[in-house]
Length: 115
Image 1 (cartoon, rainbow, N blue to C red):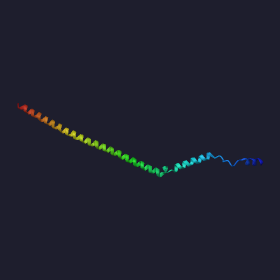
Image 2: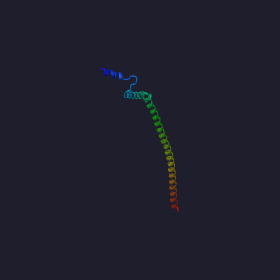
Image 3: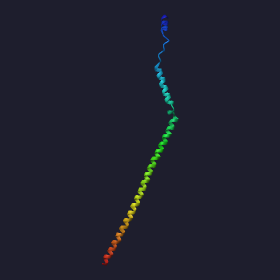
Image 4: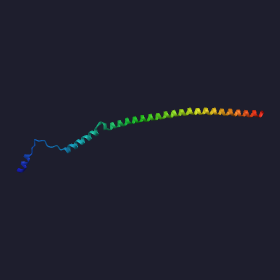
């Protein structure tokens, strides 16, 4: 008993006790995880808002790409139409040239029969 008394009285209670760092680290980690999970940047509403914003910009980009493609196709179509008209005019000119040569050749044949 005296030994127990001596052990109890030998303990100095005026000095601070060492902190239980392992427990404190666990609480700190849990606190950081909770802060991260509960932060406004990670809330479901914020994520939905970001997803909506990203979807809006994606739709805008998609529409712009389609518009550029349609504009290019339209310009290509106009160029093709112009080319087709030019080729058609040249074909008409060639047809007229061939007809005139044919008529001239027939006229030459008729003249040579009279000579």
